[in-house]
Length: 378
Ligand code: ADP
Ligand code: MG
Image 1: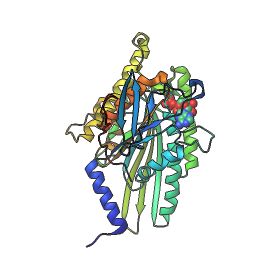
Image 2 (image 1 turned 135 degrees about the vertical axis):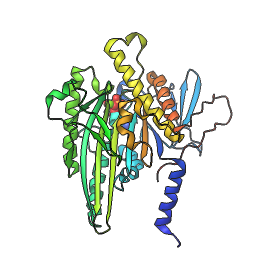
Image 3 (image 1 turned 180 degrees about the vertical axis):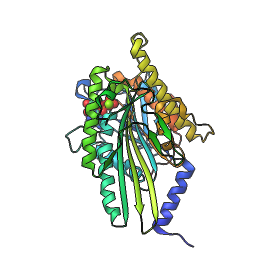
Image 4 (image 1 turned 60 degrees about the horizontal axis):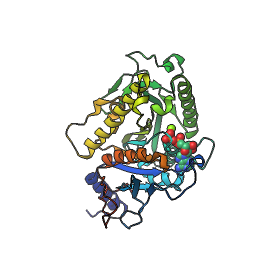
Protein backbone atom coordinates (compact mmCIF):
# COMPACT_ATOMS: atom_id res chain seq x y z
CA UNK A 1 0.00 0.00 0.00
CA UNK A 2 1.33 3.37 -0.98
CA UNK A 3 1.26 6.10 1.65
CA UNK A 4 1.15 9.61 0.41
CA UNK A 5 0.40 13.23 1.23
CA UNK A 6 -0.39 14.05 4.83
CA UNK A 7 -0.02 10.44 5.98
CA UNK A 8 3.45 10.23 4.52
CA UNK A 9 4.41 13.53 6.08
CA UNK A 10 3.18 12.31 9.47
CA UNK A 11 4.98 9.02 9.16
CA UNK A 12 8.23 10.71 8.22
CA UNK A 13 7.79 13.19 11.01
CA UNK A 14 7.29 10.40 13.56
CA UNK A 15 10.27 8.49 12.23
CA UNK A 16 12.45 11.54 12.58
CA UNK A 17 11.19 12.07 16.13
CA UNK A 18 11.93 8.45 16.97
CA UNK A 19 15.47 8.79 15.71
CA UNK A 20 16.09 12.10 17.36
CA UNK A 21 14.30 11.55 20.64
CA UNK A 22 11.53 13.64 22.06
CA UNK A 23 13.55 16.31 23.83
CA UNK A 24 13.85 19.87 22.57
CA UNK A 25 15.65 22.86 24.01
CA UNK A 26 14.73 26.44 23.14
CA UNK A 27 16.48 29.53 24.43
CA UNK A 28 14.75 32.89 24.95
CA UNK A 29 16.60 36.12 25.63
CA UNK A 30 14.39 38.81 27.12
CA UNK A 31 14.78 42.51 26.28
CA UNK A 32 16.88 44.76 28.47
CA UNK A 33 14.60 46.34 31.11
CA UNK A 34 14.39 50.09 31.61
CA UNK A 35 16.37 50.08 34.85
CA UNK A 36 19.12 48.00 33.28
CA UNK A 37 20.38 50.95 31.25
CA UNK A 38 20.54 51.29 27.49
CA UNK A 39 22.05 48.93 24.97
CA UNK A 40 25.69 49.91 24.61
CA UNK A 41 29.02 48.58 23.47
CA UNK A 42 29.26 46.08 26.33
CA UNK A 43 26.58 43.75 25.02
CA UNK A 44 27.49 40.32 26.35
CA UNK A 45 25.00 38.37 24.25
CA UNK A 46 24.89 38.19 20.48
CA UNK A 47 23.26 36.11 17.79
CA UNK A 48 25.40 34.70 14.98
CA UNK A 49 23.99 35.14 11.51
CA UNK A 50 25.73 32.33 9.65
CA UNK A 51 23.30 30.13 7.77
CA UNK A 52 23.79 27.18 10.07
CA UNK A 53 23.34 29.17 13.28
CA UNK A 54 20.63 31.61 12.21
CA UNK A 55 17.74 31.44 14.68
CA UNK A 56 19.50 28.71 16.63
CA UNK A 57 22.83 30.12 17.74
CA UNK A 58 23.73 32.33 20.67
CA UNK A 59 27.09 33.61 21.89
CA UNK A 60 28.07 34.91 25.30
CA UNK A 61 31.08 37.14 25.76
CA UNK A 62 32.55 36.55 29.21
CA UNK A 63 36.00 37.62 30.42
CA UNK A 64 37.11 38.21 26.85
CA UNK A 65 36.05 34.75 25.69
CA UNK A 66 33.17 33.97 23.39
CA UNK A 67 31.07 30.96 24.29
CA UNK A 68 28.90 29.78 21.40
CA UNK A 69 25.86 27.56 21.87
CA UNK A 70 23.28 26.15 19.56
CA UNK A 71 19.78 24.97 20.41
CA UNK A 72 16.72 23.81 18.54
CA UNK A 73 15.63 27.43 18.52
CA UNK A 74 16.85 30.73 19.91
CA UNK A 75 14.38 33.58 20.44
CA UNK A 76 15.88 37.05 20.31
CA UNK A 77 14.70 39.84 22.67
CA UNK A 78 12.17 41.27 20.24
CA UNK A 79 10.37 37.93 19.79
CA UNK A 80 6.72 38.25 20.77
CA UNK A 81 4.69 35.90 22.94
CA UNK A 82 2.70 34.97 19.87
CA UNK A 83 5.84 34.01 17.93
CA UNK A 84 7.06 31.89 20.82
CA UNK A 85 3.71 30.15 21.01
CA UNK A 86 3.73 29.41 17.29
CA UNK A 87 6.78 27.24 17.86
CA UNK A 88 5.13 25.39 20.72
CA UNK A 89 1.55 25.00 19.54
CA UNK A 90 2.11 21.66 17.80
CA UNK A 91 3.61 20.21 20.90
CA UNK A 92 0.66 21.45 22.98
CA UNK A 93 -1.72 20.00 20.41
CA UNK A 94 -0.16 16.57 20.74
CA UNK A 95 -1.54 16.35 24.30
CA UNK A 96 -4.98 16.08 22.67
CA UNK A 97 -3.69 13.14 20.63
CA UNK A 98 -2.84 11.36 23.87
CA UNK A 99 0.77 12.34 24.37
CA UNK A 100 2.27 13.28 27.71
CA UNK A 101 3.95 16.64 27.40
CA UNK A 102 6.20 18.65 29.72
CA UNK A 103 7.25 22.22 29.02
CA UNK A 104 9.73 23.73 31.46
CA UNK A 105 10.84 27.34 31.90
CA UNK A 106 14.35 27.44 33.32
CA UNK A 107 16.53 30.41 34.26
CA UNK A 108 17.68 32.74 37.00
CA UNK A 109 15.13 34.92 38.82
CA UNK A 110 14.24 37.88 36.60
CA UNK A 111 15.17 36.14 33.33
CA UNK A 112 11.58 35.94 32.08
CA UNK A 113 10.31 32.48 33.09
CA UNK A 114 6.98 33.68 34.43
CA UNK A 115 6.60 36.08 31.51
CA UNK A 116 7.14 33.15 29.14
CA UNK A 117 4.75 30.81 30.94
CA UNK A 118 2.03 33.16 32.21
CA UNK A 119 2.68 36.51 30.62
CA UNK A 120 1.70 39.85 32.03
CA UNK A 121 -1.72 39.73 33.69
CA UNK A 122 -4.35 41.88 32.02
CA UNK A 123 -2.40 42.42 28.84
CA UNK A 124 -3.93 40.53 25.92
CA UNK A 125 -0.84 40.58 23.68
CA UNK A 126 1.46 39.53 26.45
CA UNK A 127 -0.30 36.32 27.36
CA UNK A 128 2.19 33.55 27.88
CA UNK A 129 2.31 29.85 27.04
CA UNK A 130 -0.15 28.65 29.66
CA UNK A 131 -3.16 30.80 28.70
CA UNK A 132 -2.40 30.41 24.98
CA UNK A 133 -2.13 26.63 25.30
CA UNK A 134 -5.45 26.43 27.09
CA UNK A 135 -7.22 28.57 24.52
CA UNK A 136 -5.86 26.40 21.75
CA UNK A 137 -6.83 23.17 23.47
CA UNK A 138 -10.38 24.27 24.19
CA UNK A 139 -10.78 25.57 20.64
CA UNK A 140 -9.48 22.32 19.20
CA UNK A 141 -11.78 20.39 21.48
CA UNK A 142 -14.74 22.20 19.95
CA UNK A 143 -13.58 21.26 16.44
CA UNK A 144 -12.88 17.64 17.37
CA UNK A 145 -16.40 17.38 18.73
CA UNK A 146 -17.64 17.50 15.14
CA UNK A 147 -15.58 14.38 14.44
CA UNK A 148 -17.22 12.59 17.34
CA UNK A 149 -14.60 13.19 20.01
CA UNK A 150 -15.69 13.92 23.55
CA UNK A 151 -13.07 15.30 25.87
CA UNK A 152 -12.93 15.70 29.62
CA UNK A 153 -10.26 17.85 31.20
CA UNK A 154 -8.92 18.14 34.71
CA UNK A 155 -6.59 20.69 36.18
CA UNK A 156 -4.30 20.64 39.20
CA UNK A 157 -1.71 23.16 40.30
CA UNK A 158 0.98 22.68 42.85
CA UNK A 159 4.20 24.12 44.06
CA UNK A 160 7.29 22.24 45.19
CA UNK A 161 9.18 24.12 47.85
CA UNK A 162 12.07 22.54 49.75
CA UNK A 163 11.02 19.14 48.41
CA UNK A 164 7.53 19.63 49.85
CA UNK A 165 4.38 19.77 47.76
CA UNK A 166 1.87 22.57 48.33
CA UNK A 167 -1.57 22.36 46.76
CA UNK A 168 -2.34 25.71 45.16
CA UNK A 169 -6.02 24.97 44.59
CA UNK A 170 -6.77 23.72 48.04
CA UNK A 171 -9.69 25.47 49.70
CA UNK A 172 -8.33 24.28 53.00
CA UNK A 173 -6.23 27.12 54.42
CA UNK A 174 -4.39 24.82 56.83
CA UNK A 175 -2.54 23.09 54.04
CA UNK A 176 -1.07 26.35 52.76
CA UNK A 177 1.12 26.96 55.77
CA UNK A 178 3.62 24.30 54.91
CA UNK A 179 2.65 22.05 57.81
CA UNK A 180 1.78 19.14 55.56
CA UNK A 181 2.03 15.76 57.19
CA UNK A 182 3.85 12.85 55.61
CA UNK A 183 0.71 11.11 54.33
CA UNK A 184 -0.36 14.23 52.47
CA UNK A 185 0.65 14.63 48.84
CA UNK A 186 2.21 11.20 48.53
CA UNK A 187 3.03 10.50 44.88
CA UNK A 188 2.03 7.23 43.24
CA UNK A 189 2.09 6.14 39.62
CA UNK A 190 -0.29 3.38 38.55
CA UNK A 191 0.28 0.73 35.89
CA UNK A 192 -1.26 2.96 33.19
CA UNK A 193 1.30 5.65 33.86
CA UNK A 194 -1.25 7.85 35.60
CA UNK A 195 0.05 9.86 38.52
CA UNK A 196 -1.91 10.15 41.75
CA UNK A 197 -0.98 12.67 44.40
CA UNK A 198 -2.97 12.02 47.56
CA UNK A 199 -5.16 14.93 48.77
CA UNK A 200 -4.29 17.06 45.76
CA UNK A 201 -7.21 19.15 44.53
CA UNK A 202 -8.25 18.18 41.00
CA UNK A 203 -10.82 20.34 39.23
CA UNK A 204 -12.92 19.39 36.20
CA UNK A 205 -12.78 22.21 33.67
CA UNK A 206 -14.90 23.00 30.62
CA UNK A 207 -13.47 26.24 29.30
CA UNK A 208 -10.24 28.22 29.25
CA UNK A 209 -12.07 30.89 31.30
CA UNK A 210 -12.53 28.39 34.10
CA UNK A 211 -8.84 27.61 34.01
CA UNK A 212 -7.95 31.33 34.06
CA UNK A 213 -10.00 31.66 37.20
CA UNK A 214 -8.09 28.78 38.79
CA UNK A 215 -4.76 30.23 37.66
CA UNK A 216 -5.63 33.48 39.43
CA UNK A 217 -6.54 31.56 42.54
CA UNK A 218 -3.25 29.70 42.42
CA UNK A 219 -1.33 32.96 41.91
CA UNK A 220 -2.98 34.39 45.00
CA UNK A 221 -2.17 31.31 46.99
CA UNK A 222 1.44 31.61 45.84
CA UNK A 223 1.78 35.26 46.79
CA UNK A 224 0.41 34.60 50.26
CA UNK A 225 3.22 32.16 50.69
CA UNK A 226 5.64 34.71 49.30
CA UNK A 227 5.33 37.16 52.19
CA UNK A 228 5.37 34.40 54.77
CA UNK A 229 8.15 32.44 53.23
CA UNK A 230 10.85 34.61 51.86
CA UNK A 231 9.89 35.14 48.25
CA UNK A 232 8.82 31.59 47.96
CA UNK A 233 7.56 31.98 44.41
CA UNK A 234 11.02 32.34 42.93
CA UNK A 235 12.34 29.62 45.24
CA UNK A 236 9.75 27.02 44.30
CA UNK A 237 8.73 25.08 41.21
CA UNK A 238 5.22 25.78 39.92
CA UNK A 239 3.62 22.79 38.21
CA UNK A 240 0.43 23.25 36.19
CA UNK A 241 -1.12 19.98 35.01
CA UNK A 242 -3.94 19.50 32.53
CA UNK A 243 -5.19 15.95 32.11
CA UNK A 244 -7.08 15.17 28.97
CA UNK A 245 -9.42 12.21 28.45
CA UNK A 246 -10.83 11.79 24.97
CA UNK A 247 -13.37 9.22 23.74
CA UNK A 248 -14.70 8.62 20.26
CA UNK A 249 -17.51 6.09 20.34
CA UNK A 250 -17.93 5.80 16.57
CA UNK A 251 -14.24 5.12 16.06
CA UNK A 252 -14.08 3.07 19.27
CA UNK A 253 -10.99 4.95 20.32
CA UNK A 254 -9.85 6.66 23.46
CA UNK A 255 -6.88 8.78 24.37
CA UNK A 256 -5.34 10.08 27.57
CA UNK A 257 -2.97 13.00 27.31
CA UNK A 258 -1.26 15.16 29.90
CA UNK A 259 0.09 18.67 29.54
CA UNK A 260 2.49 19.80 32.27
CA UNK A 261 3.62 23.41 32.20
CA UNK A 262 6.33 24.15 34.72
CA UNK A 263 7.77 27.45 35.92
CA UNK A 264 10.95 26.28 37.65
CA UNK A 265 12.57 27.85 40.71
CA UNK A 266 15.24 30.48 40.01
CA UNK A 267 18.47 28.77 39.05
CA UNK A 268 20.78 31.46 40.47
CA UNK A 269 23.60 30.44 42.72
CA UNK A 270 23.65 32.25 46.04
CA UNK A 271 26.85 33.81 47.26
CA UNK A 272 28.45 31.48 49.77
CA UNK A 273 28.41 34.06 52.56
CA UNK A 274 24.65 34.54 52.18
CA UNK A 275 23.85 30.85 52.33
CA UNK A 276 23.08 29.96 55.90
CA UNK A 277 20.15 28.40 57.75
CA UNK A 278 16.87 28.28 55.85
CA UNK A 279 18.33 29.99 52.82
CA UNK A 280 21.04 27.37 52.54
CA UNK A 281 18.50 24.58 52.88
CA UNK A 282 16.37 26.23 50.21
CA UNK A 283 19.27 26.62 47.83
CA UNK A 284 20.37 23.04 48.31
CA UNK A 285 16.84 21.82 47.59
CA UNK A 286 16.64 23.90 44.42
CA UNK A 287 20.08 22.87 43.22
CA UNK A 288 19.32 19.26 43.90
CA UNK A 289 16.04 19.27 42.04
CA UNK A 290 17.34 21.24 39.06
CA UNK A 291 20.36 19.02 38.70
CA UNK A 292 18.16 15.92 39.09
CA UNK A 293 16.04 17.26 36.27
CA UNK A 294 19.04 17.72 34.04
CA UNK A 295 20.32 14.26 35.04
CA UNK A 296 17.01 12.70 34.05
CA UNK A 297 16.76 14.50 30.71
CA UNK A 298 20.41 13.80 29.96
CA UNK A 299 19.97 10.10 30.74
CA UNK A 300 16.85 9.98 28.55
CA UNK A 301 18.61 11.71 25.66
CA UNK A 302 21.47 9.20 25.95
CA UNK A 303 18.93 6.37 26.16
CA UNK A 304 20.52 5.11 29.34
CA UNK A 305 19.08 2.10 31.09
CA UNK A 306 18.73 3.68 34.50
CA UNK A 307 16.92 7.00 34.63
CA UNK A 308 17.35 8.62 38.07
CA UNK A 309 13.76 9.82 38.55
CA UNK A 310 13.81 9.18 42.28
CA UNK A 311 16.37 11.82 43.17
CA UNK A 312 13.89 14.67 43.52
CA UNK A 313 10.16 15.30 44.07
CA UNK A 314 9.92 17.13 40.77
CA UNK A 315 11.35 14.34 38.62
CA UNK A 316 9.47 11.67 40.53
CA UNK A 317 6.19 13.56 40.16
CA UNK A 318 6.73 13.93 36.42
CA UNK A 319 8.23 10.47 35.84
CA UNK A 320 5.48 9.13 33.54
CA UNK A 321 5.65 12.34 31.51
CA UNK A 322 9.41 12.26 31.03
CA UNK A 323 10.70 9.55 28.75
CA UNK A 324 8.91 6.82 26.83
CA UNK A 325 7.02 8.49 24.02
CA UNK A 326 6.43 11.62 26.11
CA UNK A 327 7.60 14.94 24.76
CA UNK A 328 9.76 17.39 26.65
CA UNK A 329 10.60 20.99 25.92
CA UNK A 330 12.97 23.07 28.00
CA UNK A 331 12.80 26.83 27.45
CA UNK A 332 15.92 28.39 28.88
CA UNK A 333 15.35 32.03 29.75
CA UNK A 334 18.29 34.38 29.74
CA UNK A 335 18.75 38.03 30.76
CA UNK A 336 20.79 40.19 28.36
CA UNK A 337 22.06 42.44 31.19
CA UNK A 338 25.85 42.72 31.58
CA UNK A 339 25.39 42.22 35.33
CA UNK A 340 23.83 38.79 34.69
CA UNK A 341 26.38 37.46 32.25
CA UNK A 342 27.83 34.75 34.46
CA UNK A 343 24.35 33.50 35.45
CA UNK A 344 23.34 33.56 31.79
CA UNK A 345 26.36 31.47 30.90
CA UNK A 346 25.46 28.99 33.65
CA UNK A 347 21.90 28.71 32.35
CA UNK A 348 23.11 28.10 28.80
CA UNK A 349 25.53 25.45 30.02
CA UNK A 350 22.72 23.73 31.87
CA UNK A 351 20.64 23.83 28.70
CA UNK A 352 23.53 22.62 26.60
CA UNK A 353 23.97 19.63 28.87
CA UNK A 354 20.30 18.83 28.46
CA UNK A 355 20.67 19.30 24.72
CA UNK A 356 24.02 17.51 24.77
CA UNK A 357 25.48 19.98 22.30
CA UNK A 358 27.64 22.54 24.05
CA UNK A 359 30.90 23.51 22.52
CA UNK A 360 33.10 26.28 23.73
CA UNK A 361 35.46 27.70 21.14
CA UNK A 362 37.55 30.83 21.74
CA UNK A 363 37.02 33.78 19.33
CA UNK A 364 40.40 33.60 17.68
CA UNK A 365 39.52 30.37 15.91
CA UNK A 366 38.56 31.32 12.38
CA UNK A 367 35.52 29.20 11.76
CA UNK A 368 32.73 28.72 14.25
CA UNK A 369 31.44 25.22 14.35
CA UNK A 370 28.29 24.20 16.07
CA UNK A 371 27.11 20.72 16.62
CA UNK A 372 23.81 19.89 15.03
CA UNK A 373 21.04 19.89 17.65
CA UNK A 374 18.19 17.47 17.37
CA UNK A 375 15.52 18.52 14.91
CA UNK A 376 12.69 20.69 16.16
CA UNK A 377 9.07 19.62 16.20
CA UNK A 378 7.24 20.38 13.02
P1 ADP B 1 11.30 35.25 36.33
O1 ADP B 1 9.94 34.64 36.40
O2 ADP B 1 12.29 34.43 35.57
O3 ADP B 1 11.81 35.66 37.67
P2 ADP B 1 9.88 37.42 35.05
O4 ADP B 1 9.10 36.67 34.04
O5 ADP B 1 9.15 37.85 36.27
O6 ADP B 1 11.19 36.61 35.47
O7 ADP B 1 10.55 38.66 34.30
C1 ADP B 1 11.26 39.67 34.98
C2 ADP B 1 10.83 41.02 34.41
O8 ADP B 1 11.16 41.11 33.04
C3 ADP B 1 9.33 41.25 34.50
O9 ADP B 1 9.10 42.61 34.78
C4 ADP B 1 8.83 40.91 33.10
O10 ADP B 1 7.64 41.60 32.78
C5 ADP B 1 10.01 41.33 32.23
N1 ADP B 1 10.13 40.50 31.04
C6 ADP B 1 10.55 39.22 30.99
N2 ADP B 1 10.56 38.74 29.73
C7 ADP B 1 10.12 39.74 28.95
C8 ADP B 1 9.91 39.87 27.55
N3 ADP B 1 10.15 38.87 26.68
N4 ADP B 1 9.46 41.07 27.09
C9 ADP B 1 9.23 42.09 27.93
N5 ADP B 1 9.41 42.03 29.25
C10 ADP B 1 9.85 40.86 29.78
MG1 MG C 1 8.89 34.11 38.12
